[in-house]
Amino acid sequence: MGPPCWRRVAVPPKRDSCAEELVQDEVAHACLGLDRAHTGCVIAHPLVAVSVLVGVSDPRVLEAVGSVPRAAFVPPELAGQANLDRPLPIPHGQVTTQPSLVAWMLEALELEGSERVLEIGGGYGWQTALLGRLAAEVWSVERWDDLAEAARTHLARQGATNVEVVVGDGSGGLPGHAPYDAILVAAACPHVPSPLVAQLAEGGRLVQPIGSGGDEDVVLFVKRGGTLHHLSTVAEARFVPLIGRHGLER
Ligand SMILES: C[S@@+](CC[C@H](N)C(=O)[O-])C[C@H]1O[C@@H](n2cnc3c(N)ncnc32)[C@H](O)[C@@H]1O
Image 1 (cartoon, rainbow, N blue to C red):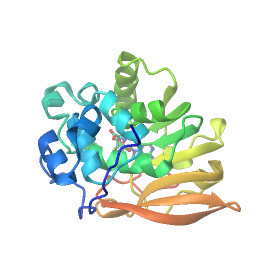
Image 2: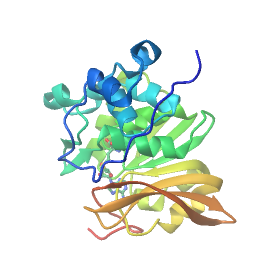
Image 3: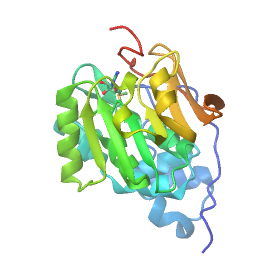
């Protein structure tokens, strides 16, 4: 059997807490015009289905989305909503990012499995766990210590051994383990913090919501000749702000 014949679909306008309802497997197949026998084992998971619907096609990303139970990374009382394509609230007014948006950002990094990755804004750890399946080594920085502790617990329960969660101001990166082959920033800032540029390896990719929090373009950059170059806009989205010394003021 050849590679999956995913058909790209139009990118929906904004990703936010008013996102679309759960897209069922049947709908996914119908909309995509895909043969169930061809895709059944992959598309059966609702979050995989919705990721395919928004245009994600990297089989490794889809496998990761389908393999890491989001229910184990949200507050227990919201576990029943974990397979909806919606951000879900976590403490301190934060949210776990909408799954299809996570899938887009992960696909943009084009990880092959050998990379060292830095994540800024780990929250409750679902995206961190996905990164752990896609790369060799993941360093995740979260500014709230109770969120970081919850993420560590969730990741340990899922048997993730190649991820480390660090409490701190991720706008300064994590210089002790640089350079990173890829950086994923999960909070908004009008510019890419200069320490992150410095800590990204030459040729490395960085994804970040560019804006002040609430109305962003999620932008993919590559580092060439020591500077960042804009490659593409991955999505339009609404993110919480990146609060920190090299980010936004409290
Ligand atoms: C949209 S949430 C994403 C959570 C996580 N990636 C997920 O999908 O579950 C953004 C996270 O960034 C964190 N954050 C904001 N500013 C930060 C900073 N300077 N350093 C580290 N984390 C930060 C917030 O506390 C929050 O947990």
